[in-house]
Length: 187
Image 1: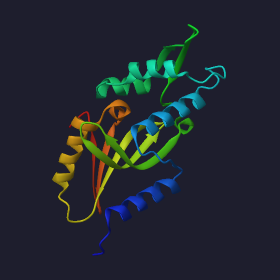
Image 2: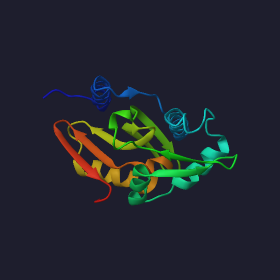
Image 3: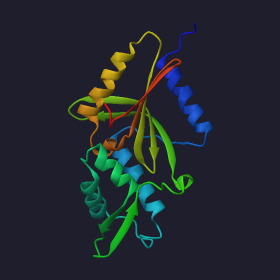
Image 4: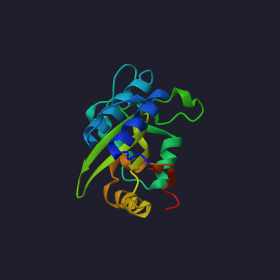
């Protein structure tokens, strides 16, 4: 058996996803995650926004409307369009995920995103769709107990998944050739 560090596993995973068309982005903290999400929202809805990107106030209103939701409400927000009142009192409908034309979505990957809230955490690989973190991948080398990793995932869910991280729909634990997928609906 060949020893492979978690860093090597992570690098291999990132390269494999990149070869499948995922764009690699560098996101190290929650502010960069928000900036990326906002940029993609403005890009995807440029026609609806009439060439006027979301202002700081509009973006904050949107975040207030979508943050802090449970798993079911987050999934509903992903599927539906959301009405946002602009600063000029006009109304715009934004969507976060195109389920009909899936290839029109923007698929990105990032690694080593750190969250420094009440508890510190650093996530191995995160898959973003249209700037929202929807899949979290935790990579473990041989010799690490899978139950320990599962408990780590549950700790992340309870202590660290705030803001846009509430939109994670699937958690994957990869350990050599032994992979486990979890939907937060059932755990």
